[in-house]
Image (cartoon, rainbow, N blue to C red; front, side, top):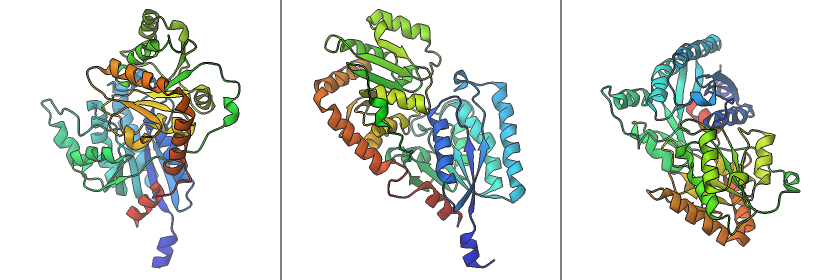
Length: 378
């Protein structure tokens, strides 16, 4: 085949990873990546599905079924070799917990063999901050396997430190690009008062129960305030604990559990909100998809000044608070600051919407994931 013919041949890309259900930022990310890459005619895209997490409570746990799933992933990857080796395989790093790293150690060597180029996608972060302990030198093993990748992709400049910590030298910063879902017709007839929205897993490192304490502190000044919680409650947190805390704080009638949301139900939740909060202090936080979705829907934000959050949300439409030993007090102070500036929320939301369109929409300018994968393959 001529060199010109080679240039016209689509690049064959495999994307490993799990898509919803259950709901998880990384699973949503994998689904969004598949949609984005499949729109590019220069690529042929195949999905190697993972099913390590069958239910929300499986996340972060160890069970025999996850080990058996490793063999299933191997089989799916090998079946794809009927068309020859993949040009590029994109693999989402599991995170910093020992079980997730063990999964990577078992899966990545085979994917390295079945693909000419291997790209690690660090949606799961925190490797630079992880405390590597134990008799088994897991850091050395992980570094040995991760360094065999040809490229690492992170979503914010802050998160470059994670692949660099495990010895990957070639790192590219590529932000997620989402399809614009804003529908102003859904915002008609919203309830009076101020509605605060939280979307994500409900667990301590995501800001519970501190979010309830912060909301309770503004009830006197905002008598019609309500809190929408959209997401799955994961151990050690539970619905009983949440309602017990809400009753103790006197806001039981102001808290509304929506459960996991996706698609239209997520857009309805965003349309109902006046303010979004993102109080995560999770070590694995790398790119808050919820921040981007809130900006898409013109919402002002209250968020932790944590890891890459400022790289994502910028400065104009967000009140940040530090992660320290007075976490609840700092969160409460930030929420009061937001309400002190209630008349600026429309302005903040407009600024956030403009940032979304410039950096995170599917039509925004700049390097795209498909461009990076094609360059690597050719």
